[in-house]
Figure (spheres, helix red, strand yellow):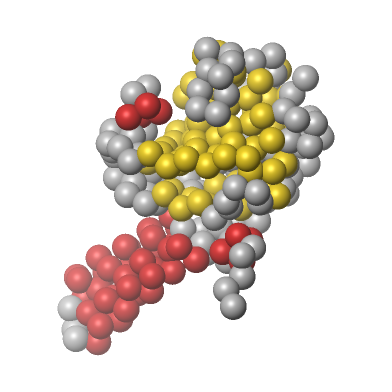
Length: 221
């Protein structure tokens, strides 16, 4: 019988399971090219193998945030910090923090705050560059609404980018999630948006580089 625990999908260190087919395929072609005596082709596919392995790396992270702090769900660069009037699942003013992930960042995503998944919503869409403001509204994306143990709402969105074509999210509605644990990934360049209560204390600045599961984005009040 298939396990219903989404964590069974995430126990793949130091390489995310989602990337294994890509790495193995590139390595296989490299080997065949080398055996057949095509050094240039073998070199090209060796580079592709190394790049793919690097992209799908899944390092261990240690979460040391205080109990009221929201950690980054992804590696990347802070490109948006703003207050907006509301968003999906939250019909009230919220703080929005956006993280842009380029192809060299770790793309395994992590839970920003412990709680229970109360809602999930997928939107098919475009594949605009993920660092554009329009990407949050028009690109393919996946939303997760987490209700914390104190009743506070934290929402995060996985947003596909220009060359991203697959959003992976393992938890489903009703799952209990723990801050810092893996919950999915976006393949080949993307963006993460985090929505927290409007009065949260922001602890990052535009342009800051953050690490998923470790860097604190804001503090809840």
